Image (cartoon, rainbow, N blue to C red; front, side, top):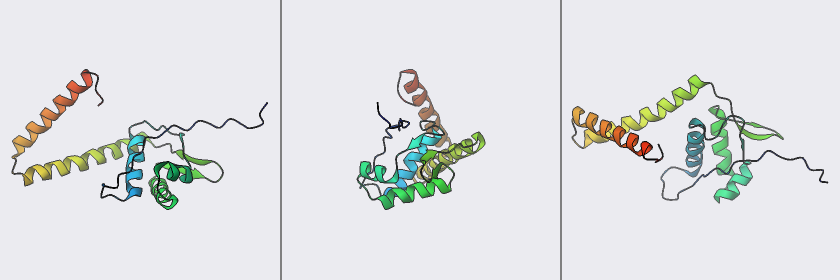
Length: 146
């Protein structure tokens, strides 16, 4: 009989770092973890890998993972307790909704600016948005990912 206590299982988080991405590695980690939390893929209370384990898994330095965890903790997405590890924080639904909207608003703003630089009219931009929404709905109905 083993005297070790069973530890809660940590999910395998599919984080990927790209050397071709102009974003610093710690920002890549932050944004991917933030997206997993906002989408509900990482639920409140989910235990995250230690900074050292994550660094080993991603083949980066502990300083890089520490920076990402510190920034996410400062934003209220995760909590770290000495001896307890790091877990996804409980975030109020209003805050989650605001973060989700902020992310989409930023992406749409950039898309509109790119369209304007390309010389598209407001009507053409609306048409593109409508076509994109219709494609995504069709994709979901055909069993694709949203």
